[in-house]
Amino acid sequence: MTVTRFAPSPTGLLHAGNLRTAVLNWLVARKQGGRFILRIDDTDPERSEERFVDAIRRDLEWLGLTWDAEHRQSERLDLYHDAAGRLRDAGRLYDCYETAAELDLRRKVQLSRHLPPVYDRAALKLSDADRARLQAEGRAAHWRFLLQHAPIEWNDLIRGDERVDPASLSDPVLIREDGQILYTLASVVDDAEMGVTHVIRGADHVTNTGTQIQIFSALGAEPPAFGHHSLLTGPGGEALSKRLGSLSVAALREAGVEPVALVSFLARLGSSAPVEVVSDMQAVIDGFDISSFGASPTRFDPDELTAHSSKTLRGMPFEYVRDRLEGIGIPKEISADIWSTIGPNLDRLEDAGEWWSICRDGAQPVVAPEDEGFVADALAILPPRPWDEGTWKVWTDAVKAKTGRKGRGLFLPLRRVLTGRDRGPEMAALMPLLAPPRLTGGPAGGTEDA
Ligand code: GLU
Image 1 (spheres, protein in one colour):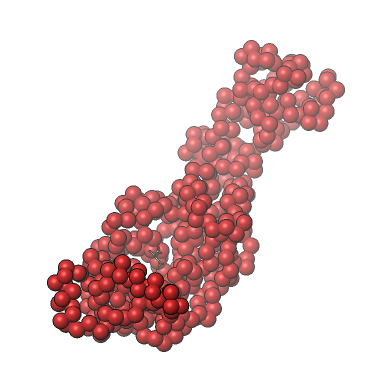
Image 2: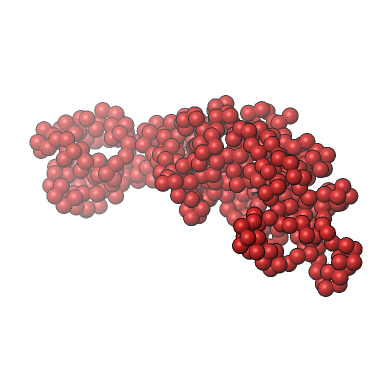
């Protein structure tokens, strides 16, 4: 069975970049009828925060990215220590006593001699007496994984044939001197133990994958299939990192982006298939194909997302928004009419609430000073209620005949006096739903029954 996972570190909010990883893993699992695991990578107690765990859950729930199991690395430390013991027994994990400052100095010397700044494995030569002396100095060991110096190759689900040469890498530290287990080991132990079959993550993890494949083998486990998606850039190709605050999932939700639009956008961005407007997640799953993704950097344009979200919203069948319309106070009896009239014009579903209050209470009319006389004349012949779909034409024809105005000069002031806005739904369809304007001795001087 296909098993994927999303493994965020709870050190910040989800944003468009790391959400993309979640979306792709979720889709790989759902497409295959498999399982999707949420794994909270919280082995770093200093940087992990509970509020971010809550925010991650809330974001995924809002998006409908359901998960079948949830694990926390901080509750699985015994497993990692056990695996470390096995690596140690196999001679693949060795203790090192250099301080960060010493390592830094060594790197600088290597660089000045034009050598690659790779750990020189000095600790492998330590005798028991050396160790005893270093420990007596008060030094605690950190532990490195002994890489085998043969190229590591895999067929990447996105990048194709991929190769990492461990000879150019430092042996990775798996346990810090304070005993903290690092992600590189914990992730392998979890992926093996949870039966993860596919790992989709950012291209910044390609080197990790090389070393982790060796850790899988050293632990006697089969590595999963790996796919590394390209990193997102801004619309001009610039690094996205500076703008991530405004691109947090929470900020996008606040801005009224439709959840299914965000998922369907990320499900296609960077693939050879175009972004498509769909109304439900099943359609996103059906249209998903990981092999259509490419390795080149992917541009993410927030304006394109906003436009895609508006299109998605406008295309939503009423059944998909019924509950949400009720949730913002639109009565059941009228919500279908409201939707068919104002839906095709909305950018954000929340704006339906404002249109509903205009319909219910009438708008605060807007009348430009130069239109005051014209609007008063028009309101004087506003047909009596009830209004129907033909009322707008009857009225505007009559106003045209009476005033000689036409086009924008005719329609815009009338739209403004009835809705208080320059733009909005088709007036013919809106009028039957609309309360008369709130004319309380305002500039147009009309009355409610005008
Ligand atoms: N916690 C890691 C990260 O956020 C997970 C990487 C992975 O998917 O293996 O980068």
